[in-house]
Image (cartoon, rainbow, N blue to C red; front, side):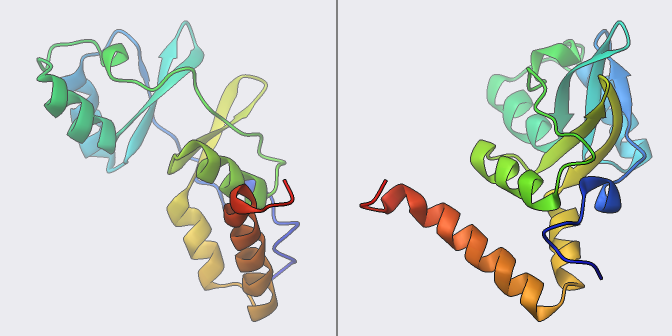
Length: 153
């Protein structure tokens, strides 16, 4: 395995991503996600990605607001779409996911969705990393988390 600092998102991302038109309903989108066995879909409008809906959105937003299943999927999507480029490092993706509190991050190139990187992808990468890479990633993460509490900032 190559150095964890240089592994790019394209090396670990899921390349098959489901997208749905913004005109679809909550029910239609949920059925599509179930059929495809995915935890997130990209919401498109005029062939442009405008948001994301995850299985968590169904559990939290739909239930909390008692939306009808015929409601537009746009009502529960997260927007604007937070994304990352496939040439970025996995470490940058992990940092962005941590900072924004997300578990799924669409990968875009020239405004086109080319993949998705998830927290699970990063954990799977850790599972096959060598000890030196794991130690480096751990110390990077700890330093980042505790930098907010440093008296030197």
